[in-house]
Length: 531
Image (cartoon, rainbow, N blue to C red):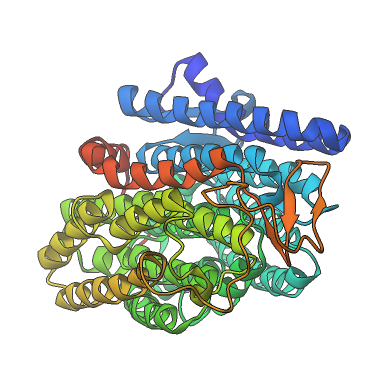
């Protein structure tokens, strides 16, 4: 392990322990204090994550041995380029969603449950940081368990209507964890260590490319496919999004599903190495995600479910890395494939957080997320409409956006490895994505008012203009002062509508820093393993 400056190495454990400490604090203090200290803890954690990414980008990978003991006797944490990039995404999205939740507390869950949002979210943030910074398989297992349990709790904050989806999510995440546990048990039995690099070296020396290595990778891939909602194991995710609170869905889509993908990336690149059989199976599943989930998004009548199916489709693009890596002829082609997927993951995280925050605002304002109820609402919600349109451009991979840069790199990587079927999947997926993403934009911008649309709570984005009419069922929640109008409708603070627009603009304008992001993505990346 190369020594890192003490101050830089100290940042790594703080990225995990700081949100964990804030999560415990939010459990111990009164609910009213949580609404103040929770956002403070989130913003502090975001600052630490951004600082780590800057340190890595400027000075190279940072490593630290906890308690001064190096592996295999000790535990190492490491921030290389891939980990720093995903930690940066977590900090940006986490900061934006936390700000949205602080401005609009109703988006964090039903009354009585939302007080636990900050504890659950900060616990999940701690787990995410541990996933991206761990250099040890067992720590990754513990971290992904924390992420999964926190995500289940966050979904359950949506109230009794979300409990069934939360329980289904729990079953999925436990199944995935058990499969991954079997995989790391086999690694330990074969090598006697769980450190990523040492395990990869010993597997390569003992049985390079053998059946044992393929089984290890297959078990890890199956477990992470469950957690990432990869086709055909994706059925739980749209239901979880449909019932989750407005501030929870962007966290699940932009961050949680990527943590399991990242673990499989680590196992693939550092422990087992590429495997053509597992890569082919993952490629088929990835193509199914891109196309089948996209077609499902075209058919669904609800906006949040549409964005949920879109997440399944976009996850498919990430998993295309594995067949491209297996087909690569040397490290250069592997790096090209990873750059493409890393840029797509970054663009997806920003754009999808914008879409889900926008969907939450619309559901609060209209009392429903049915697309039919959104007809001709652009005049009442111009900021949200703009956010959806800009995010859709990046998510579909259209010029000029970071999503376009990532998809272009994916096409180049596919051509470089001769994987023409990936080109076909990417082109078809882009057309399908354009079709389903056009639906909400077209509905908001055109058409006559729907008879099924509830009376909105105000005239503009988060406005309060229309206070007349039938006020039956109107109430005020003392926690936030928001007014509920009609059945299930509520006003949204105007400032909250700016958050999804900011995320969408970042997703589009980040193409200007696609070069530095690509350089960061491969900084310190290894291609070891047993294959």
